[in-house]
Length: 237
Image (tube, rainbow, N blue to C red; front, side, top):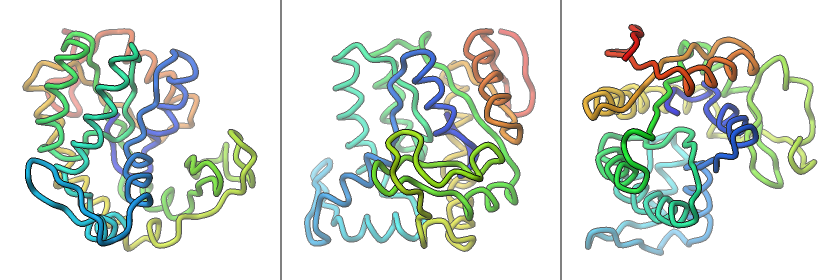
């Protein structure tokens, strides 16, 4: 699933995981776990290049995407593990950059075959992204994100584990959200054309509706074999 910050990718991936038995692959959690597990002066070596964890942490906290080679390394490891266990995967917001896609999509095609891959783009206007993200919360205990929607606005504890819901501080200020939106537009959105060029079925879904309505559209998209030639134009294939 692709889409700007706050589009509801994680929420819809959770629903698919619960209803269809998919493994919800949360790249942001993998990033946070790896960054929190290392000191700033530690390094990770990818393709003979060393990257400092401190530099990657500053990127993440400012809203700029973590270095694509580092992300692709962490994600590739997890994909191979899950494929080895026979797991079907739903990705929420990954890959995030074209270089990541150029590494991860061929890997997925090799492990799962291209015919099994589906891409969904959930869209919301920029102002809605800022509104949702500046109010959204996460669970203090299990780090599960809670979207800011009428269905969840009154929640004070996590429905998964009962932990306290808190905001993410600097990560969800309007200023940082605008940076993340710019990153999405310039670095993530080009992945759509890449997926279409490779013949992967792709569907655009309006994310402004409620959670249940969007979930219905997601389910239809996975069942009906609809692709798009470019964002905004649906046709049967």
